Length: 183
Image (tube, rainbow, N blue to C red):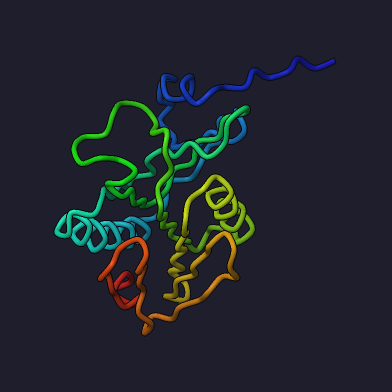
């Protein structure tokens, strides 16, 4: 008989010492992740700058990056690291965030799919965000310079680099050609 591994809670995971590798907590288990290539970071920064500047200039909400932890499931806990996430001021008031993981979910998550990311893993993460209550997940694919939009109750939509990305219900007035993220 093999011993049963102890599952971590989100709080235990948050307090655990860093091991020098990026990780996520998936159903109570720490899962290692590869460091993405610089191109991935370049795209994430562009999204963060465009989205963050718009949200700040229009006093709409917070934009976070760098795989900031999002608690998507309880018992066992799952903490995913979104490439970019947007929290409106209706969900998280202006000012510094409290310590620890937030008890609310972002309305919008961006994930950047790199060449080494498998679609089935990306789609599983998208489904997890949507099931937890994220309104929309936008997957940017650096291979095709496209964006895929996922909503809980709609079929996914694919936008080419020439198409305009908008989120009228979440970010009124925000408009950007998908190709700008890949410049």
